[in-house]
Image (cartoon, rainbow, N blue to C red; front, side, top):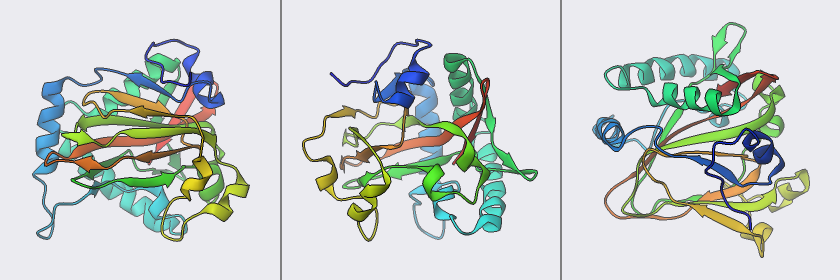
Amino acid sequence: MWSPQTLLETSSYNELISGKIPALIIPGILSKTECASLSSKISNIQTTNKKPKKFGTSLSSHIYEKSQYFSNAKTSNDFLKKLFAENISPIISMRETISKVFQKRLTTATENGMSYSDAVIRIHGNNDSVHLHRDNSHFEMSHYNVSCLKNQLSAILYLQSPEEGGELTIFHKMWNRNDECMREPDFGYSSELIKDVKQTQISPVDGNMVILNPKFYHQIEHVTGLRNRISIGFFFGELSKNYLCSWS
C-alpha cells in the first residue's frame, strides 16, 4: 500500500526521494490558534479592490526573467517578514522542523549575493482546484543555481482547512521527459498519464506540514464552501550532505 508516513523516522528523506512513500505528514507545526490568527490576517489583505489568490514570488513565474525574479523576491520576502512580524513565522517553524527531522541545516538559497523567495502563500476558494502537474527545477529552471541542488522536495504547511475538498492527490508516477507530449496547452498534463495509477490523498488539516517529492504527479481537488484553503510552501534540496537550501 502506497500511503503517507507520519512517523518522524530518519529514513524518511531517502524514502521520499525514492518514492517508497508518497509523502511525510508532520502534524502540529503550528497550533490551531496560531493558524487561525495568521489566516485571518492573510484573508483581510486586499489589493486594488481584489482578494489575491497568492502572496509571494514564485520561480515558476519567472523562468526566463532572472533579474526580475530576484527583484520581486526581495519585495516578497520583506512583505512576508512584515506580515508575520507579530506572529510566530510559519516559515521559521517549517525550516526548524525540516532541519530537525532530516538532521540537515536549512536556509533560503542565495545566488550572486541575492536571496531567493522564502515562500509562497496560496489561497484556494470555492470551486478552485489545481490541474495535474509536477514540479521539476532541474528541467524547468536550468538558468538558476537551485536547479543543481540534489534530491529536491516540496514542503507545504496548511494554515486553514476548507469546509470540504481541497485534498492533495499524489500519483505513483514520476515525471519523465517523454511525458511532455502529454502536456496541456494552459497548465498541467493529460489525465491519461495517470490512468490506472496508484494514488493517495492528503486532507489539508491546518497546522500540518506535508513534505513530498514534487516530481511525482499531483493535483489539488476542488474546494467547496465559503472557507478558503490557505497554505504556505517552498521547495528545498541538498547543497551538501548536511546543508539544505530552499526557494519558491
